[in-house]
Amino acid sequence: MPPVIVLPLLVIAGIFIAVIVVRPEITVARGGKIMAFLALFIFPALLTVLGFAGHMERSKQTSFCLSCHIMGPYGRSLYVDDSSYVPAAHFQNSRIPRDHACYTCHTNYTIYGTFRDKFRGLVHAYKYYIGRPANPIRLYEPFNNRECLHCHLGARSFEQGAVHTADAQTMADIKSNKLSCVSSGCHDTIHNVEQQDKVKFWKPVQ
Amino acid sequence: MTPTQDGLVSKKLRAAGILIILSLVVQGLSLVWNHPLAFVAFLVVGGLLLLTGLGMYVWVLLVSGESQAKTAGQTVKN
Image 1 (cartoon, rainbow over the protein chains, first blue to last red):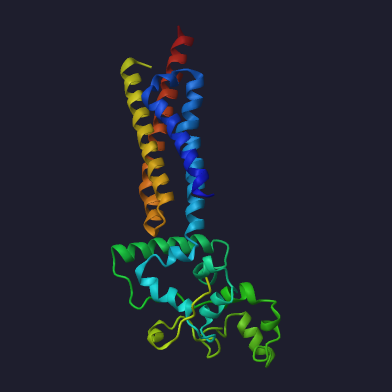
Image 2 (image 1 turned 30 degrees about the vertical axis):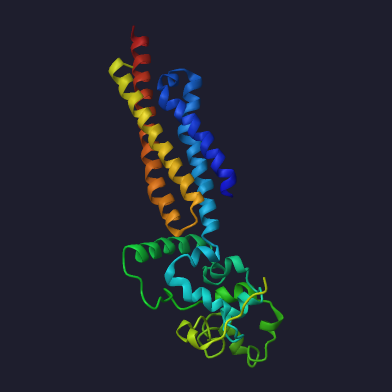
């Protein structure tokens, strides 16, 4: 839910709570008890859920991920003018939503994947501000084909691609994540941030 | 409820309210600040203040409920 809606609700809840704080004796009466329960329990709990949903949604934005300095080169890699760069090709051709670019490929498409990612995000924040972030940063685990197949499964270019269908085993291995899309010598030019000084960048038309 | 208990309950209720208001302020500020730390502030600072405030309020509910039950018991005896 957008902050424009949550913020006025926070103010309204704050006013109700302030009444209880200033005049706690009103809670002696039945009506006051009900008001106190709504103001001190129900409203804050609901607003926290709404606020949490808002934060979760906002943390999926590309600008959110790139607000950490260490992510800068990865954000720039989305503008590399070379179609062999997988993230750049996806970003520039709108194969993924540009405002959710990082999240779309790096989330874990499982039932609690989003929550697990956000928990990891907290760990990232801790490492960034208090600990020592890895340099270069690394994925926690090898990139799972599941994340690619979330979109590509069933697509003609994937299902009927010449290399993918070269033999039945190849397709089975891709689908079962035995043969990685990104590290098997096929689609293996990813962010490649070490090479950024040697590439040209695409400038989007404003 | 005795006057002493009444005063304590009022104090706790006030404290719970102030903590919850503070948690809402933190939540509100975190929503207008577009930064990863805003999420951390929302969860850690806002969450802790809210949980403490809610805990205190639940304590007030339990204490006042208990004393009401005692008062009702005495009335039946009399």
